[in-house]
Amino acid sequence: FIPSIRYLPHTATKNCTSNQTVENEVEDSKQKIVSQSLTMSNKSPPNIAIIAISNGTQSGQPNPVNALSAHVRQYLQKSLATSLSDPKVTAIVLIGRPDGKGVFSAGADIKEFSGSDDESSTGGVTTSDPDGIPTLNDLAHLIEKSPKPIIAALTGATLGGGMELALAAQYRVADESLKYGLPEVKIGLIPGAGGTQRLPRLCGVRHALDVIVRGRINGTASEGLKFGFLDGVASEDEGILEVALRWASWASTLSPEKLDSRRLCLKTVPNDEEGMDNSDLCDFALQSVPPKDMGGESVHATIEAIRASFELSSFQKGMEAEKNIFNDLLYHSLAGRAYRHIFFAERSSSSGRQLSKMKSAPSVVGSQLKKGKGAIGVIGAGTMGRGIAISFLRAGFGPVTLVDVNPKGLDAGIKYIQTTIHGEVKKGRIPGSKAKGILNHVKSSSDISYLADCDLVVEAVFENLKVKKEIFTKLNNLVVKKDALLLSNTSSLDVDVIASSLSPERRQYCAGMHFFSPAHIMKLVEVVRGQATSGATLEIICAVTKRIKKVPVVVGNCDGFVGNRMMHP
Image 1: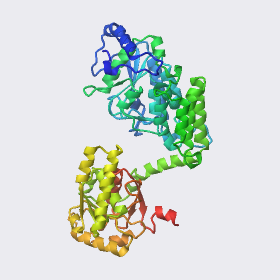
Image 2: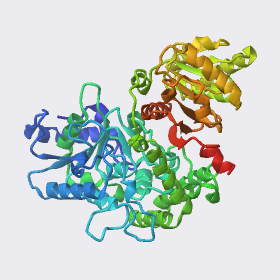
Image 3: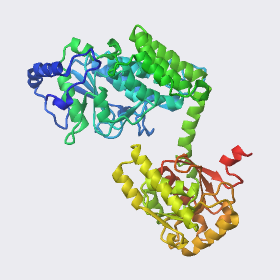
Image 4: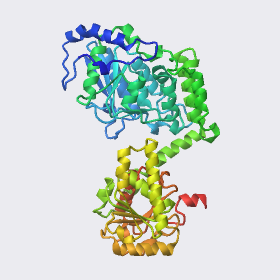
């Protein structure tokens, strides 16, 4: 029943009790815990309430990321109030799902942000709803001030408002699936439910700047344990719920004074471990961010809010400063509204809704491609072709065969691919073992017949309609699989004219797949729908595009499509 050494609570700040003292406290509490005769089984102890965020999801409204919508917030408030008023409950576990699987919470329901001048449009973060729906701040304060210990059991995505609720809990444990972060800056906002005030108090200004200013979403369990965000991490042979229940059993024996020592609202921001002044850390961060008028408005605002955590005289004043900055960005920042427009536009473009009304034709190779498997051919080893090849290689497709009639150009393309992959290993983006497998998947030839067994071919030669038609005529005769996808990276030419080089039965598998240069870096891919292109083909291309970590946008077949048409109307 006692947390092992690995699970001993980390100090919230440098001024808090040391780990050795906490060990002594655990030993002092041992007899009390054993006397409760709690058993760690599939059934939770009767004195510990388990509140699952997913149980607050409205019926018929899918919520795979446990977004903290108004309905979910109401459920959490009611559940917390019930548990706090029940004399039989001595501790509470807050978890994403009852089974401990999936995500904790990816944060606020961004659809609730209207960005209008109406102060009821804050997405339930800072301003109370006129109908009595609690804000994230209301929930965070309720959790933090709880007279009973609340243990946040974190799994998967713990982002934005989800992380802010976890920060308000007295203890936080996680499993290895955890990915934590505060990415609000990427939608033109700052954390608005205490993130800029609690995280500096818990982990220090240096880590708070790293997480909040960069808008990170990839904080790991080991990192959280290192910086003090987490108090424990589940081992391989136990589940997150088992760990959380053990912590809850132990914490339920603590005195009110000990629980007060875990409330971040009562803490001050610690000094930097490496001896830098906290104000200097903020000044240094300002030197590496873009100016306000060049997309950096929200980034500057996050630093201002973090600075308030140690410059203002109290937690309450810091929270008021955070609220004012958040609301100012939400109501008055045009750049912020643009960021949120992009956020929704990207998700809408890749949601599949645009394909729902299209007739689909079955594809044998489609299911494999959707799973990230299949042989890929790229014609043209120039700037676009080599970048496209890298995109498929990094996603695990293979073999990827690069074809170019110019031997020197082909060699240059292969060398570029190798140099790029080795460079990403040096930067820590790709493990060395994975890079070796990637490069083993690279094939090259000056003979187009080497593409005969491909599942998907992308033509990426220069913009010459005659040359492209000749290539597709050859592909029509040599590619063995009749349902292989034959795609063109053309940026402006008529996809229907290119498809006319194919036999009628192959044309449904032909479309445009227009990457933007450099293809292995730029996220946008225009999926150009030809007159004969089937809905299934578009669906497969979109799935493959997402597999290679890009954003597909289905567009019509017209001069310049959408991207180039905007730049050259």
